[in-house]
Image (cartoon, rainbow, N blue to C red; front, top):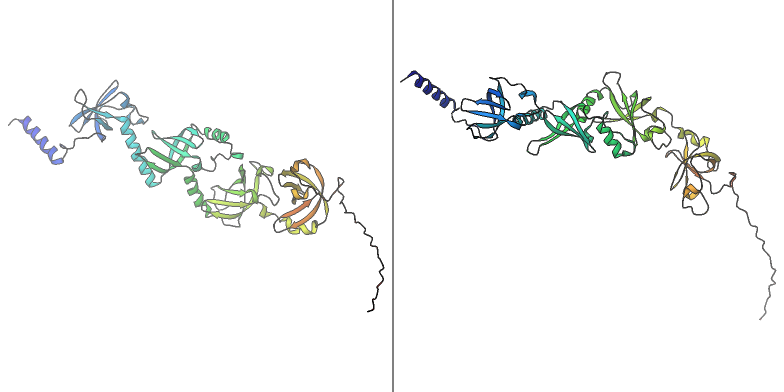
Length: 396
């Protein structure tokens, strides 16, 4: 027996013993091959000495840098997309291999919870479309961190979209919220990272603590305040609801605040990663002494701040506001309060009710004349004529 035959027999025995002889790749398998040659738009791989595979045409191109500069002898992964072509070679793809590897990597990130960086490619009204390795994922608006959340007054959809479009091209740090390779679904969250960071710092504060911070955003429902606890260098963000900004009624936080203002507040609630603040609790409630300042029946001057279908909101002073209900505007039915007053108008009102605990004060103008004087109802004097009637006694 020749030396060549003995060597081939030995190699065959080794392959059989290792099970490699029968390990023939199937369609869709991710295999590892050794680069034999890189010529033009074709790369040939040796697949475990069993066969030769070729990657060509569009199957060469992927957004991953792994395949950008391959040298002969390099080990590389590819996906089987054809068992045999016209030349008897196995057809392979770097595109599918890249996708497969990316899905596997992202599944591992999902399990570990480790953050990843993504690039924002586009935006729609629902959120951001991002590039994750060379896959595409979605970052919903609801999963943006507070600093990136589009806090737009009035919820104008176009302004929200404009804000989201400003992130195109930026890198964001996110966690994988949901992943499904079969459906090609990849949902991401920036908010979860912020919440986790916030929770670790929140332990440094408690309800009742006073903080000083900067107004970072204003929304219809309140103001966001960014502050740093004394015991920690990491910043937190809390919400001052519109009802906790001031004791008097305001229509929008911008009536009293603007972004960049430095304010003081007290912590009134902590729910998970959410911090609730109050500014008004740091000042005395002006309604506690309202009955010493105003009394039912008093005629006072006030400025009409707002006109609603149900009446006038009136400022008596910087702290006390009252309501002149539509039923108190005229002795006759009123269809539109705007016909009886204008915003900014100063006029006289009569106080008809005071409820300090509810922070309510009722006003009226229906009993006042144009000069603000109370109209007194004329008393009609009735005269009674007395008629003397003689009693007649009838005797029987």
